[in-house]
Image (cartoon, rainbow, N blue to C red; front, top):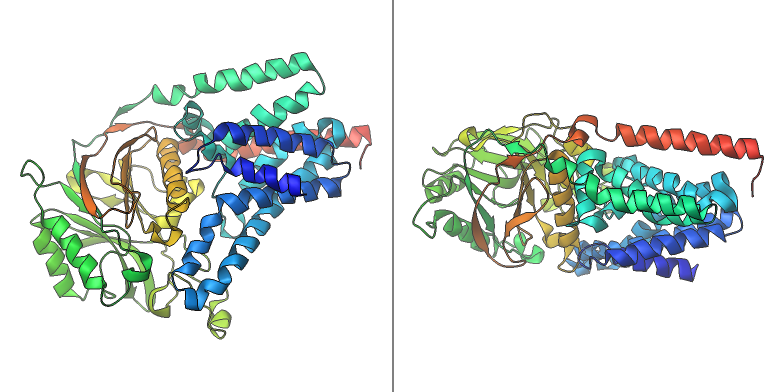
Length: 494
């Protein structure tokens, strides 16, 4: 068990900020070896749980950071949060390893893992509102295989990653010649196939747009402090008002998540006038938490060049136990509220995923913080976006791994959709990402400042945008049926 957990921890080093992807691949092979020698289905499931526990314990270690913002109230929850999060997500991997052993026996267990682990990872992305953070596919950020998500999506790349490691190892125990062929196909064709999403690239229908991205660098323990709120707001106003290096003004100014300090968006005319005057005729997009119609929303608002609020988008996919608490009425009796719900309110989810029309600056798909984690949600948005806008406040995640892993997921969303992605973050990482997931410009992490950058105009019409996860679901289902039939015909079990 300890060895399994250690191997899982080593695999986690493939995730950002470490990026040691060769170690992750070696760890997957070692996990396949442990699976083959596990002896029984139950023992394989325990190996899988320990392996997953080590993996998620390291890759999600940032989960303790939100509880340390207010140590007196929430600090005691931090170790429990990490243990239950890592242990709970590891149950998916326990099921994957147990099923692989049950379906494949000792001889085919590693090959069965090529089906069961991606299948359970896909399930992890959907059940209980989903949490597909730290998927194995993310080790490929910045490398050629990342481009494959434009064709097969992140879950297809999960499957390919397991095929390249556990699958090749499992085949080597059956037929070395077939293992060589499988290895050549998996390792040799992935970089070649990854080039295909690049070929149909085209120019967006919009002209060149210069964006100004603001990063106030407000630490979470100060962000809502009454003494510091006006300091950060005035800093954002100053960044908004400044001229560019050549004396010009940007075409659009973008503030990060919940950057405007008002709880009544449409009624606080004084705050809106301050933003309008600082913008000097430039449209402004900003994040705001505000009350409306009896609810409290985490929103993006668009102010046009005349200072009129023209459009809003309300965050739909909220963070459980962060922005709302399941069975909140009951939990509130025990003093348990969402960590990010300002003034004790639980946020209300938005009702419609929509595009925002910026006129000459194009149509944008808005995402707020956590929403960039879910490829299926982004894929379900209306067609017609010229670029993706991601406002976030990653001060919650600390400074070691959380913000960098969040950035990686944003890069993958850009490749999947074939659209540039612009990311404005309170403490970082604020960046402009092109349609191939390459960071074109960024502000240093935990640095107050702003960035004037041109919006990338190249776009790609991706297959994943058209099909979503359905092809990989069908493939996994067919392979699962084949394994089940094979087990039934062999009449063998543990």
